[in-house]
Image (cartoon, rainbow, N blue to C red):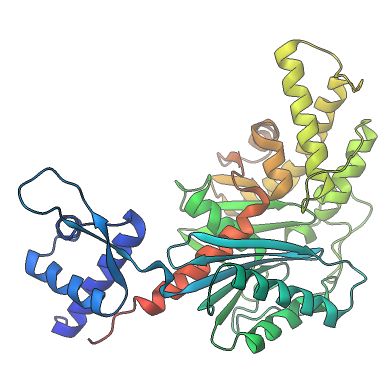
Length: 412
């Protein structure tokens, strides 16, 4: 059954808006070429979208031709403002952007483990309100939140998880109360990192891949045939609980100690580095110290390879740094090989701050080991976004949700 004229108009409008989002400002002629629509149809949709306040003239094409230059149309970026939050056990980071994703303001606040639930929630909400004000936004249309823990696939709510601060769950309710006009969406942080890597990072050429999160904790996100898979209860990717050899025991349903987390979590990596004589110094803000020691080891080995030196200026043995990276790759490969044997994703991204810090040096070592351990051919890539992937993914999902509503087909 053919679409009604009003439905056809709405679909054409949405197509044009998506192109303007992806390509930036376009002329009516360029919209005609990209959409395949007739010139009168494009003229009508431009008039409708301008009247609706969704697009506006943002300049001229500057083409060399007779007559006036063609007008460039772009999305009205301040039609809606969005916020993204990266909620960690040790603090919160916030960015606020316009409708096309340009970041207008951002900030972070540490929240200590001894901070009470009420004060922690208030600190986080106050941070959001401050960043919104700094961005010059009157209100937020959509808020995307990335948090550790399980997201209930039926309700979209953050489930109560042992080991996570109570203020995480309270924060979502507090934001909905303080920002009643905003739509608040919550997603697991590792899932958001995978979405960001697929859209803007190293997995852009992959419809199927797994992101292994290596930060303070461990986690995995599974993307199959272009779709993020959450599982029946939202627990897909809880790889920290994976029973593995080389630990002191087995994990339990409420404690991942003894699982893969005990091999590849930040504390375990720091302990492993110490066994090879690598000391942990103050690293960058908002990243686990394990990322710093991995980054130092990679740099030390690379410098040694380039200069043929045996020790750096601090006296560290570069051979020890190389052995540390080999031992770390042995550990990570156990988790990766398990995932590969079950899912055959073809590509595994080492994400999080540690995966990013390890770069190609660590990813190459892991790939070599996985090749020996699991039959399916698998490439292992380091994240290009690192810990920033969570915020990027939260902002992308907020933008998608806002555009889905604002650009939705409707009778006009």
